[in-house]
Amino acid sequence: MAPKLPIWNHHHHQQQQQQQHSFFSIDTFLRLIPSWPFPNPRAPSSPQPVPRPPERGCSLPLFRPYVAKVPWHGGVRAFLSQLFPRYGHYCGPNWSSGKDGGSMLWDRRPIDWLDFCCYCHDIGYDTHDQAKLLKADLAFLECLERPRMATKGDPSVALLYKSMCIAGLRNMLIPYRMQLVRLQAGPSVVDMLGSLIGRSMFFKQNLNPKSSA
Image (cartoon, rainbow, N blue to C red; front, side, top):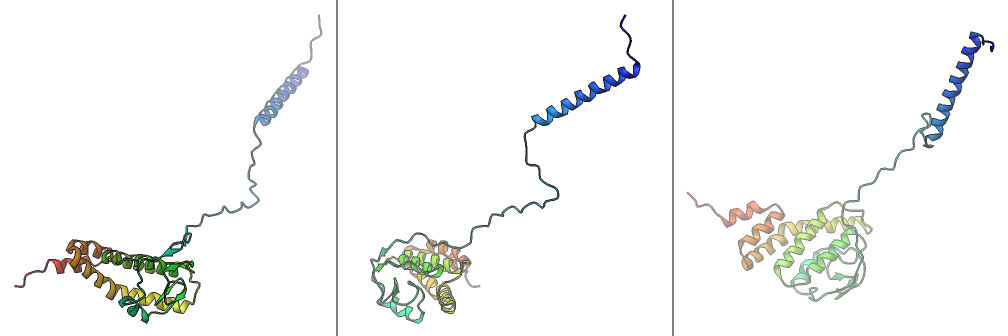
């Protein structure tokens, strides 16, 4: 008959087996876990880049030369523009593509947003249609009143030109062209265009006058 092991030896043997079994289980489990880059709590996390919102305003698109059809550098248009200063390549009297006396070929890129507004306005003015001229004036006013990037030319000249254009468009040129379009197309067109600049109530009162008591 085989000798019986002491009780303490038996318990010691069971504890060794449990430790080996538990160590094997933990070691196997750790080997199965993929090596993820856990963050270090002591090291400060690097700030994530915050996406910047796109700058407001009109970015200058790819420039394409333009050939004008209407020689508008003479007559009434040229006379009214004599009061304005020159800025960039397209802002100012008889000043297109940076050429004195105007030019039918516009092959010079605008220098900044203000010059680009003038360039787009000149293209819109290449017509005799009063409705299209009014549309160009409204777009020009909207372009001037939006916040834009910094100007590249003389800032004092840019501010003066911009202020004079906004005042002239609002107080004289746009109401004048609206009156011409009203005579040509009827009052409904005036109501639609007047709503674009916040003057629809003014035109509604003129179109629907109340009878005096």
